[in-house]
Amino acid sequence: MVEITIFVEGVNSINSSVLTADSSMFFRENFHKLFSQQLHPTEFDLKIISFGSVTQTKSKLSHIESRGLNGVILIDLDAQKEEKNDRLNDNYSEFNTDIIFFMIQEMEAWILSQTDKIEIFGKNENLIRKRDGIISDNQLIKNKHPETIKKPSKKLDTILRQCFDVLKVKGSKKRVTGKRYLKSKDAPKLIGLLDLSELMKTFDEVDRLVNHIKSL
Image (tube, rainbow, N blue to C red; front, side):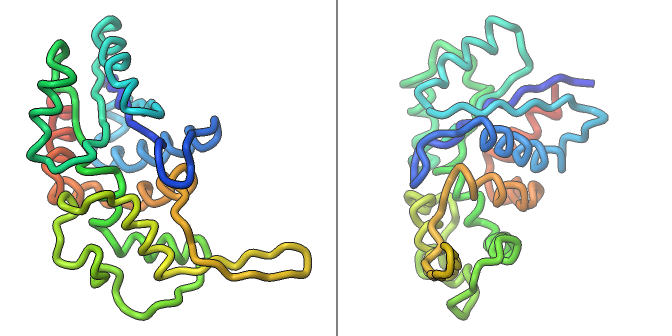
């Protein structure tokens, strides 16, 4: 059995700035669930470790190197995939860049690539569907490859607000508001719903990551 550790950049943006202990565990569990679709537990002892900011990437790379781990880094690129090599050369040239993999442009691009899972998420969360139509037809993402969508976390937030309401009850008062995207709470649930095989077809970096691990 191969021991492999995936260090995943966690929460550092919209509406939720940090991972609590509970949300970090939930985050790790759902990433483990996702990758276990291809990396079977009988073959891989897969560990997911989340970290809060891309600025910690170098320390994680040093940790992998100093401990001699079978480890990889998965971080946001926050840019078009054509900028990947420049980012590697500018920031990480002293490390083994073969173990750095990018979510292009952010983790939320993965979610926007499978809009049917957003519908399932809405049902699971008992959200109120308030807009007719298919989410994939939304003008923010229609006919766009998810890697080309700038700030997909903000696009996902807008789509959720447009498509779903939340019923909030406080005492005898009820209030309906648009669903906001809470990264530490919602991202793990959405990630856990995704189809890894489809992600591998859509994102070259996901395919490269999974095949890299399988080759170990």
